[in-house]
Amino acid sequence: MAYGTIEIRVEHGVAVLWLNRPEVRNAFNEAMIAELTAAFGELDADPAVRAVVLAGRGKVFCAGADLNWMMRMGEMDFEENRKDAVAFGTMLNRLHALRKPTIARVHGAAFAGGMGLIAACDMAAASTETEFAVSEVRLGLTPATISPYVLAAMGERAARRYFLTAERFSAAEAYRIGFIQEIAPPEELDATVNGILGEIVQGAPGAHAVTKDLIRGVARQPLTSELMADMAVRIATARASAEGKEGVRSFLEKRQPAWLKAAKRATRPKKKK
Image (cartoon, rainbow, N blue to C red; front, top):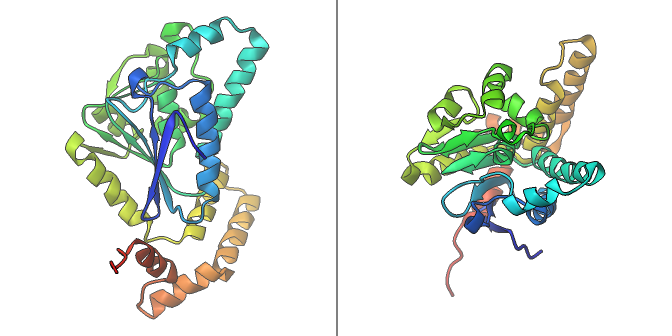
């Protein structure tokens, strides 16, 4: 599918999805939201993609909402705004629910909805000069749509401060509160992301999918007998699966599992004729 506001590059089993509106600091509008929603579905269905990196072209990762889009929203009635918000929420949920591991590669700035994109990813690495802000209250708004993801990523106490003050904070602070997992100088950001990807591809694709589902099923749930029974079913299913059997067998036989061999074959340079 051809896209106008984003760009996708797939290489060595990794899809890098670039927000590609650098002239407006990768601010999103209805077109970008629709394209992101479609792209996340496309990447989730592609068996050749093992992991997804979300990045931004130009000087910043994402400055939030496009000003022209915001002006149009200001002229809409309640129902039109509700539908627009549902579209944005659906896009974030599509990213959050992706069965492949996802990494946000963040640089420059990430404001408002851009924070939601980061938080909807499984993990994030940022360059040391990056600034962050949940800026909605300064516009008389509330960060409702991104709140489930950002709250989970930074925690309630930090959210109380940064949602209510809307102040900018540094990459070091984002790292301290757990919003991002890695910080690096700008020139080392790609190497940092690649290091995480190198660890990810050691795992089995199917195991990644069911483990992400496991995290969603367990997070913030009370430890009940029903939950324990569900966990027993999950591990039994994994042990009985073809991937589970191959993983245990390869470990005992002290060899690489089949999925790692397949990944190496896929990335091996082709010989010139």
